[in-house]
Amino acid sequence: MPTETVYGLGANALDEAACKSIFTTKGRPLTDPLIVHVHSVEQALGLADSSATEVMQIFKILAAKFWPGPLTLVVRANLEQVPMMITAETGFVGLRMPSSELALALLKESGVPIAAPSANKFGHVSPTKAEHVYNDFYLDSEVTILDGGPCNFGIESTVMKICDLGDKKFEFLVLRKGGVSEKALHEAIKDVPELHDFDISIVAKAHKEFKEETENLEGPGQFLRHYAPNIDSFLFAGEVKDQNIQLSRSVLIDFGAILASQKDKVQHYVDLSARGSFLEAVNQLYDVLRWAETREDSDSVLIADVLKLAQSAEIEGAEHKEALFDRIFRATSGKQA
Image (cartoon, one colour):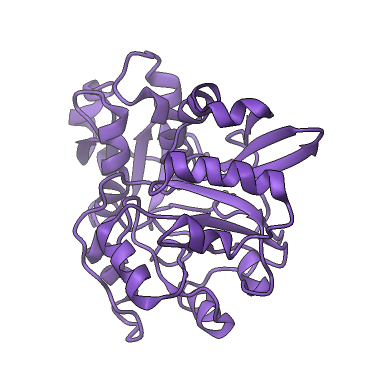
């Protein structure tokens, strides 16, 4: 099913066998939990542990502020409803209400919450178009695709755990950067009066803080091997140091024409945003990565290291720069050209 971020591979979140089929179909490890999608705040509240009253109070405030939208909130699950397997055996569940009209219609029509990670083979580039899903699963007859056209944001939701530190102190722990920026979270704390009753800090995982695939996670999207095309990919800052890489047999993915001087040296050149918009680049990234991996005359993909090369805070969508780089870093496994 389409969401505003990426297409999701969905199953009834209350049915353990159905959810297990997601892991099997994707080749996803059971250590990586599933986000549960809902059509309303009320439906979400029935899936959370209501005994944590202050956490639930903050949950409802944030849901009212950001839902429907690309923010996944991680809280203790109501394990009488949510299968423990969905939570990667941690007892925590990520909940979100998508803004896609088709996703919301499916949620309402089905009458059940839908567990749905990205609709791709595990570790591959996430799908932002129905054809991306088809290309990963056309051999699997049990996958039915609802074509809602291209997703309108282009990378996954922000995953954030609400951590109760006691004495009205809370930490918003960003486990995965995504559609809701840290800037937007800071502004919410400042602008929403109901949050002024709490002492809240925001902590985001650093780019190199990744988990092992054998470790059970409280929220998805924390493994290094993720969002990767089926071709050797590297971060590129303008100079190739790896002698195994030939520019003449490479695809160069640029940003804001920063590396345009290299255009004639590579086999293929594409710019995520010629005008230098991080928002446009976010929307283009996964589609471009999937295009790049199909270039049969190329052996590698070089992706502009936007964190090093694009420094201006005035760039459109600058609040999404970190999320964009996170996906580029994971697509390359952090390897430098």
